[in-house]
Length: 419
Image (cartoon, rainbow, N blue to C red; front, side):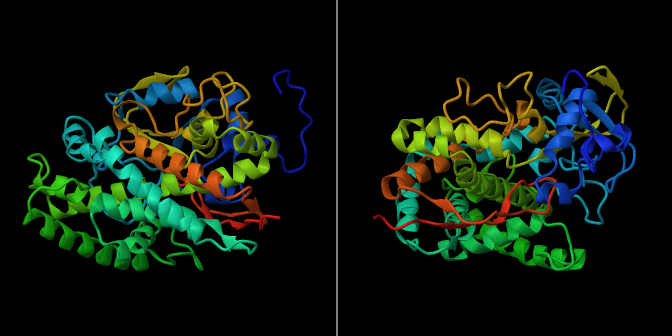
């Protein structure tokens, strides 16, 4: 590719004029055909301006080092929900933006993040680990052997929903409500989709908000506890927040605690089935699980992008980005940047530096629950390898229709009976 000797194929990404390339199309993610666009942008125009898109004009930042530069420069690139927030769609829909700490700048961001971060502290994770392991074991022991089933539904959703209910101290019988609400938050209203209209989405939000308002009222009138809702209700910086701001943070914690881990659990099944040599190595050496987990988080990149809004004219990669411009950091592209990561398109479970990825972001907005995600993935794979010689993919998964969540709706698998 570097020597310019590409022979363009019909309907290839190279048939499209460079200035017309628009990776922010959910259909490209659902069909898993967006990676060649990022490959071309990294090679030819790594800081790329798209003048016309469904979401208006925007900049694509596609190389690892440029993404890191934007992600760590919150003085020039704002996350503020009133300026458009953290997704490419922010500011272009009819939904009034929700305040949440990931969509805030310092100092407001910092104090709200600190209010909930003890819930995922090393000591709290140590307490949660045996509970997660017990649940993972029960989920796996309940799976049908020798019969096709949906891994997303019976395993990925179930484990993450159980953990999320624990983080909120919500009743376990309500855990699938959390999963549903998380899906609704990121769903694009589409005929035949999870939500068909914006009005339907907002109706579900009313139920979602009422549920957590009730949970807040329970927590604010009880002694402080180790769950996230209690922490928000009792922390000096957050106990007087407006109901809408509390709900915004609930939305953030629901999506953050659900989508990333759930889709990486599913992604690990796909990656290992697509790379049977790596699956064989993992079975032969379960000590590779922590490295495999980090490699899967990179390879999957469960949140494909984060958005910022430029607040002061700033140069990135030789391009001048103007105040007010929308800037999209494509984490999915940065994780495939061969100038930083060797053989980035390959899935290699014993990489020398497996945690060298940007799936969790950088700087002040780095994912607050990244260690919990790694813990759940590590435990589920330790328990899988104890039980099953193989989890076999039997058909291609159905991918999410989203430019934000890079995930899976269904993933048909079978666990062969032992012979």
